[in-house]
Every structure is written in C-alpha cells, then in structure tokens.
Length: 92
Image (cartoon, rainbow, N blue to C red; front, top):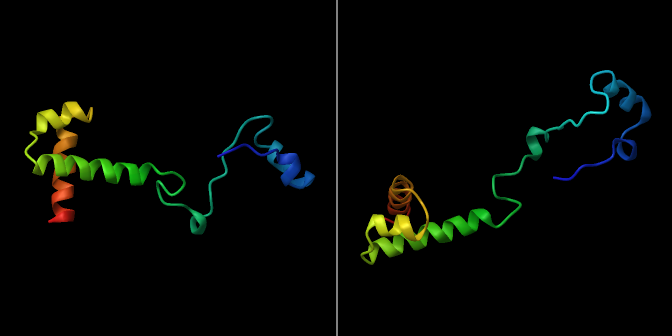
C-alpha cells in the first residue's frame, strides 16, 4: 500500500469536507467489500508457506522427529504439530 496525495485524487470540495473531521492527519480508507483481496494474493508468502509445510510433513514421514523439525524450521513444537495435522488431513 502506498500513500496518494488527496490533492491529486479528490475534488477540492471533498477535501474541505474531510478536513472538517481530519485535518493534516493520515487516514486509512478501506477497500470496498467487493474488491477485497485474499491474504497472500499480492505476494509469494502463501505459496512459500505451503512449500515449507509440505517439506515439514515429508521430513516427518521420512522419520525426522518433531523436536528436530521444531529446531530445524525455527518453529514451536505446537506449530509443528498443527502443521503435521493439517498436512495429514490434506494429503491423507
């Protein structure tokens, strides 16, 4: 998200009206409900986490214990357990 100058986007009358409520402050204008994006839609983070979680599951199936996975991937034991359960449900 980047900042836009109101003077370049909005009519002067609307800027004057907004200044009655917020004068010289930053405000966030949320997206319309019909144009919201899903989490991870703008980056590769979602895909990277899917790959990492699948790698964790494959390592576990290959015999790596949960404590070692926790240390290797810098995650808590609870996070490893959650990932393994989700992957097991997904991959059967």
